[in-house]
Image (cartoon, rainbow, N blue to C red; front, side):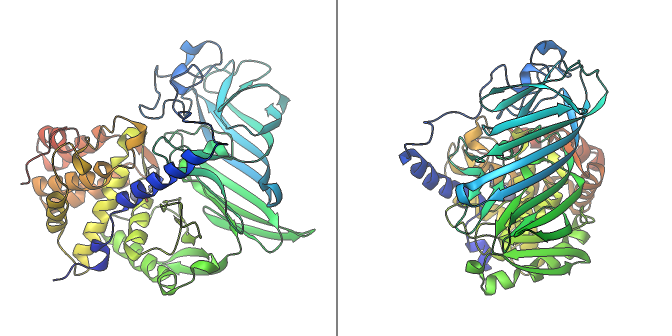
Amino acid sequence: MPLPAHRAARPSALRVVAAAAVLALVSGCTSSSAPERPLTRPSAAGAGAGAGASGASEAAGGDASDPLFPALGNPGYDVQDYTLALDWTPQGNRLTGTATLAIQATAELDAFTLDFHAMDVQDVTVDGAPARTRRDDDKLTVTPAAPIPAGRAFTARIAYSGVPKTITDPDGSHEGWMKTDDGAVALGEPAGAPGWFPGNHAPYDKAGYDITVTVPQGLTAVSNGKLVDHAVHDGRESFHWNSPEPMASYLAMVAIGRFRVSEDTAAGVPAYYAVDPEEESDRTNAIPATVDAMLAWADRRFGPYPFASTGAVVGHLPDLGYALETQTRPFFETAPEPDTVVHEMSHQWFGDSVTPRTWNDMWLNEGFATYTEWLWAEDHGGPSTRTSFETSYDRSGPAGQGVWAFPPGAPGSPKNVSGPPVYERGAMALQKLREAVGDEAFFTIVRTWLSDHKHGVVETADLRALAEHVSGKPLGPLFDTWVYGKAKPPKD
Ligand code: TRP
Ligand code: ZN
């Protein structure tokens, strides 16, 4: 049987990497961009330094910093809810925002840091009282009038304005706030959220989001969740979006443009689609049917769709080089092929609902999303997952390179988070797990994984423990070989 089109196409990872290389060249030629400033500095401003600007030892949990992006996040507090009121003007790409964060202190806080790149901060209050602030590059330190005891709930409000930032990653890819020909797009994986709002921008701190975006009349502003209000006044339009389910900040999205909007349902879930007119095509028109079919199929394979709304945004950013599984409503940089739709929708379960605690475990996102593409093919007249495994294995070259360049569970460098081992060898590891425990146990493991950790955060050890529990088999050697092994494992 011939390979279906999506098997012949590039694996998602290769597309990301190829585009990243192009963008790296482009940014290397841009004299205005800061040369090679690493995003990850194991400095005192990072999460590892703890909650307080002073008194680092007060942080809960010791050194909780991300192994690949140690500068992101702060373990000393837990954001419950973000309320963002954003006003954007195309002239000069200016954003005026108010971020209201409902926070719970997990350590005593003399002061606390928020991840936020250099926009102007006008005013910061904690529980309504003015707080002192300090800027260090990509951290905003807030010192309330009095220390906040551990366990206390409080509200921080940050008023800011300026030109929001595009972030260039160690691998050369771009995220954060990006201007387009007819608007702007904000994407966050892995380190883009600090470019447009202050927060605790590590994947482990999930929160509810309420995002209102005001734009000039005639533009549409799309974000995550449900559109709860839309108002026009004084030549400006406001779009109010609400996401009650917890969301990691890298999955928050805003897309502004002259979109063609359609509303629908997919497998019974309210769906909102926004398409850049430049990307209108048969392929784009096919998205709602693919989403509908995918959600119904995944409900049977994986369990219930974890959110109250769905949809997609199709932008026109051919140079971006990647799509992103922005929560409830993936963002596609151009009209996507069906396998890419399946991939991003798979992330709604794997990554969005069940989120890795650190970027080190990115393979739990990309391995499962790639494996979902294999499973989808298997269930729709394409090759079996075993055949996809062998195809991947056979074309993946010698040890030490490509898919075998590093173990999926230990990328080692922030450059590697979108590398082929994270995607394809991650999917191979899941195929090996399926073969080791059998189909029945495998799908019980997958469904239990998704229901036990719904809206939570996880690490690889949790998957191994669950798989051993369900199957009754010791799986240490399998994980050591396929997830953590540096060597190219034998095929069978
Ligand atoms: N998660 C995206 C996908 O697979 C790809 C991606 C976009 C990505 N930005 C990234 C992967 C940054 C790693 C890091 O659909
Ligand atoms: Zn992915």
